[in-house]
Image 1 (cartoon, protein in one colour):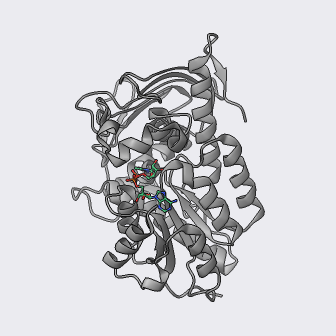
Image 2: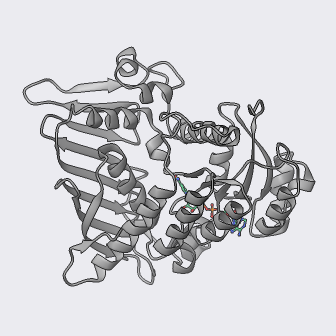
Image 3: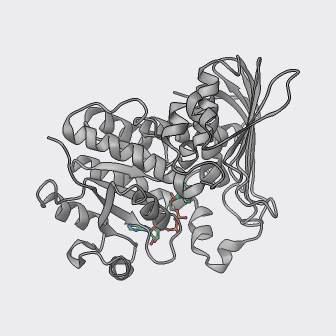
Length: 390
Ligand code: NAD
């Protein structure tokens, strides 16, 4: 049966002072396909209620915790209950919340890293595969049109066989012991019980690894890594340096850092192939640089006809004409738009088209957890080069 209505979204996390929950709320409603109707927004039930009030939600659908939310939403008739939940809590909560919503028959959009361990990640993968439920993972950087253009250039063999990938994600906001001031985002990110085995590597290294695998279509097979906690007393890494080997024989360098003064969100990638090199920067996301031997440098600019003519994916994930910059919110919204179309198809019993299925999911979540565990193992090992287990 056709779904002639907006999809109904619930949220766990995103209470007062939280960062990414509000980004999800804005991005999800950008295309008018999704409405937020319910939530358990905070670890503190009173704060959850306060957020629900600020968002003008029906107080009956603002819950004290996610278990109460599952029970109450599952008791509502289909079409009235939420269609999916967005999980925007710290990492330690992703697994139990995703597992329980999946078991209750809800589709899930989850923040990264997907879980605390690869074992939990594989358990979610099994649950998703045996259900007809849709699982999205918010590796938002794959949502940028120029990233999709880069992927298409690799797929169409315009880059040639890939020789080397360089990817970086430096930040500077944890260069001092911010967690000791009680700052909310710093506190849980530096606590292994809430963050997992990786600090910087889990928080932003996973974005870099995901971006490299997404654009190139290659899989990382071996890692030689060095993790460091530069800030005295910090229990998790705040700096991560890796050499990579890919399944095609390509080589890579990945570095992520949270102690690099002055760096904001300087995620950038260079893909060097036999025919051409690509370069993309998250802080200037509307441009893709292409360099070919003995030719002037090309700057491909988002929103132009020549981009649309080359890449259906870039065109589909573009909203504004060239010169009106699109960035973080739009990339998030692209993942939501593709996820929403896929959820609608699932409800209607249809398979979504390939362009709609172009958003990260549970398989990327498993890759992310294996990446973190391999980097941690390599960093501890004297032998260094460590195989990424399947
Ligand atoms: P935050 O500390 O700003 O907010 C977390 C919120 O979750 C708070 O409101 C907290 O009260 C709530 N919460 C905690 N446990 C809960 C529970 N059991 N039930 C309901 N609410 C609960 O954290 P953040 O920076 O927004 O990060 C949240 C998640 O998003 C993390 O997994 C992080 O890795 C991810 N993240 C992703 C991106 C991205 O670009 N994709 C960016 C930032 C954060």
